[in-house]
Image 1 (cartoon, rainbow, N blue to C red):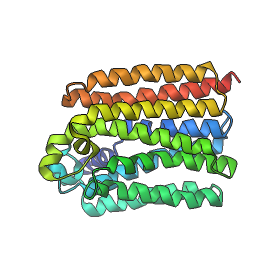
Image 2: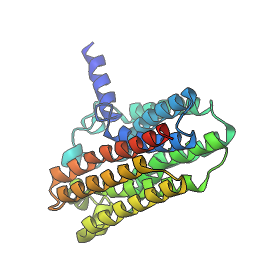
Image 3: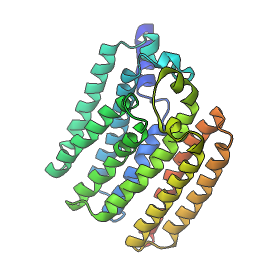
Image 4: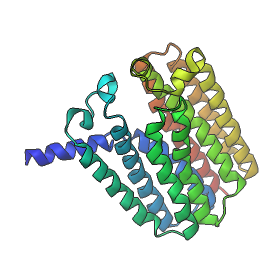
Length: 288
């Protein structure tokens, strides 16, 4: 019985069920797109499919990430107790879990249109290769941004049978935002990553990290404003962008001295950014 409990705890850890921040950061942008594409009233079917899809794909991404990092996680303070490092889960078990999750995601996607099913292969590809990109490029955060944004493209494709310009605007906004907050996350591990040879935007940006994050945050707001302008959104949505500007300002204060704990808190704080933007979109459609 104790062995079963221990294995379940290990599965929770490797899929990050106990750390939902990654799910939130993937879920909110998906909801932005779903609410806009469905004119504020998403069908129950699509709401269930995309919500469960987010949870499953985020878990799958975490599993393959730990598999890719299994030989270096033990050398990083923040990740030295992960299941594949401690032996709580074997590599075979991790890969089996990954393919099980992908199979469940496929079952969900098969309830959608052929066009969306074809697009879903891109999502699986991005989720699979992202963890390995930190070995070859200083821009793994760019691949994460694409992976975290592709659900929005699928939401528009399923709802409208096409991918309108506004979908790509949202994609670009979320891409900039993701690179910004994941760079904050990478700043936490920068010293360790330099020692073990893992690449990241935090290392690439160097002393300009805070300024580039600020530029990315400003680009995010500009692109989201362009989305609102294109859709003729009113004060609820515009107010959400003003609030987000305030949240970004607070995050800049947190990372000002590049302290590990504060950089991590700044990363976690982005949950509220996604929530506020969704609230603006939700209220905008509610009052239309």
